[in-house]
Length: 168
Image (cartoon, rainbow, N blue to C red; front, side):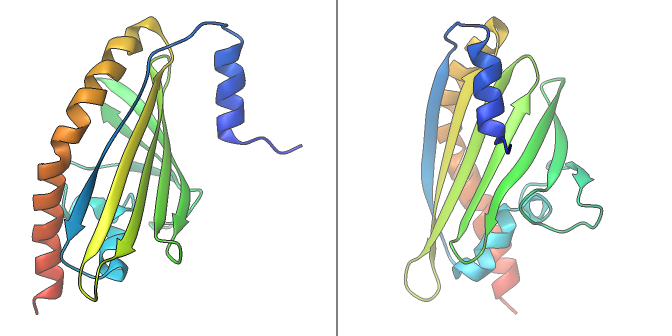
């Protein structure tokens, strides 16, 4: 029998029979390059090209490639965070991560791209979070209000990197 990560998490939360804090937040970016140039910058390896503090520890695959099924960890707020790249679909222009901070929160980061003309991309970034514990409730509420404020940083940082890549 095949289980999805979402089903396993749902069962784990259901066994506790209590409702936790949940939030969804997002933003849309307009980026000055074609989707084929923009897309890889949202992967776990190439994100460091525009986010200098991004330094994941890749657990799988052993080669440093971006593909669905990749698993890596980061350190956030003195916690180990597990990331699973569930969708990395260049044809559909979609990237999806499941992110788990054990005994704190579970999240999903969904990024969809679409071409706007020949040399522009619209990126819709959606972050969904659910607290796993009472300790995580406040964090989820804070992220819901703070995540949309990251839009300008993402816009500027990714645009700067795209200009470096496209101006030869």
